[in-house]
Image (cartoon, rainbow, N blue to C red; front, side, top):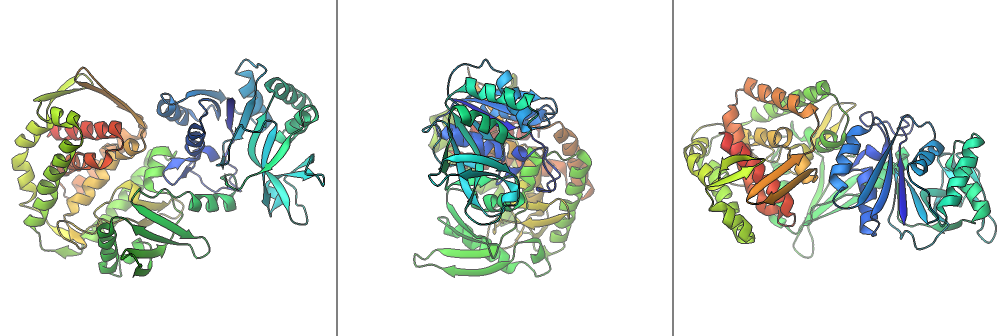
Length: 538
């Protein structure tokens, strides 16, 4: 079945006050934009031929989606110049294809429905709503047959059923005719098209129980809370009334370290973290912690999917360095043993784990060189041999202070309007449990996001292949990133850090994280490539 997703509308800032995105479909929700949630759901349901309608100025989103989904589905993107109404968007989608007599489904780009698609033709999903002024309401007979549609009006009473943004039509030609009639009559709402079509092919209303709407503030907030994506070993539950988040983990040691970090943090710094309400041991002996929940996006989401300018990112960078400086004002004795544990022992333990995962890595390890994008590099084995003294040098100099331990963009919640930061998921150890460690480690974590493209890699926004003993890759990063990388390096130098030390730690970070992504071989390859490029430069 042909599928059309309409995502060419602009954000209505009276409903969604997010000034860093061009449409509802581009707003990030827990790690990926709304449109990716919709596309991933369609792929899961088995639909492989999809036409996506975007505004012409959404060229960056178009580029990212084409590169990210081109290998997975037959994705056609239709770019429209300033469509004013949804009728124009749908007409543009139909005009872009040869209309044949076939079933077709239309989905709004700010709607995610987890119920089945395509099993009932001439059908619309509906759900009960309280505030009718935000929705198109279906009026029905006592039998449930559709009588009329009422657009965004305040209606008294209860039990009103709103259209949810999914429409399945048995006849693409009839739909095309209904669009043309609506256009001629000057109609601006989708409801006019639906009623014209309904007169020829009666539409059935089917109620959904798994609907997520991102087009209105109240439903957006609820949807975001529900669609949390914890790591495979974590479990997260949100209390929507109290705005708390309860977490327990299969990796109890990791959660224990987090809890210890939050408890040991000085009161003057706790304002930068979500408040810790309770912690307990459940019947299975597992730690459970409950913290304050914040709906701010992560800096990773804003970095990869947002539309923030260079000066805004420079301001964010300055603010992060101020927080880092505040952390470093709490000193501790330097520990060469803990540095050795993190920079030497951890690195080689992770390499051993990687070599046991796949013969590919063991073969690559014993080669003397590797080719990446046509350029020859020494193998990681030889690079580490040559950098041995430099790595040992990291363990013989420096200062210890309070650190976060995982100070990357994905663990920094950020309120753009008020420049409020909340730090989540601390490491909780550096060689040994506690809040103290090497502050260079936090700076390297930031750099592996800003310069190393870590957030693009874990969002799978890259292409990589290995053929004839040679890697070829490209990362779909934004043009702003290069200037921001230069600004970041100047900033760390002003803070007294040696760029070479930070790059060395950054390269070791990429190398040591590879075995943790065994379920995604291409992502492992990209991390290996970044480790090779960064470390060989040194």
